[in-house]
Length: 152
View (cartoon, rainbow, N blue to C red):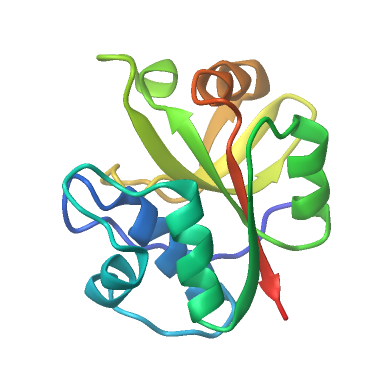
């Protein structure tokens, strides 16, 4: 099962969070520019926290909760219910490179072995796939943060 979600590439190196929220807002029929979402989140060059993203979603009229130390079953349940999930990962586990940097992606679906997601920082970042074990490593490195968003 894959949720059909609009894709937006992030406009700055530090705006993965606002870009992900923009995709989810569009899914729920709320149109915003990245600049508007970035301002609502309070994003700086230091990035955005899960709590800031959740608060900005609430300002846009949606129900949102940021969850630390979530588990894969919770994430899968949100997807089964047709709700995309924003997850904070260490992208070095997905693509290599320097570790220790948080990066937001939007989870859209899964199989027994793979996870499907949009990555706002990749040229062809739509409907990307990774092995569940790879995602778990990337997610665990950032304390398994997920942002649940739904209509009120």
